[in-house]
Image: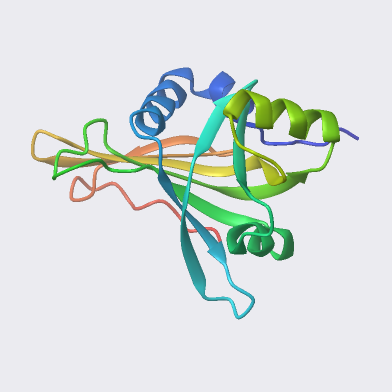
Length: 169
């Protein structure tokens, strides 16, 4: 039986243009917003530097940070790209939802710390992608692109008769 990892590279292979756009949005700024779940189920928002490399989306964070402890307990997350200054949002609004898989291999941790310049010790998570969304304005129309493994890409424009994407529970 083959295990599906839902790595960033799976999304890149399925939708290379959208993947490139998402990476560019995240690359435009260094800090982004990570949503995790607290022990009581309420959301926690934290700043985060996310990195795309080797076909993966990496989430590195300080040792024993609240967000790392949240992800160890409940791996679900949402990562929102920094929209930038003002109301421009060039490239649209981008979000990635997924599950964080902690990486504990000392060699991988050391390489990540060296490549990213983050001092150790640290927590490192590899993202399993559950959904990628991009929302932008084209002319006077709002355009929503939503991709999920096994479902593929959907493009909608509310008010044009398109139904909103179904929400996974």
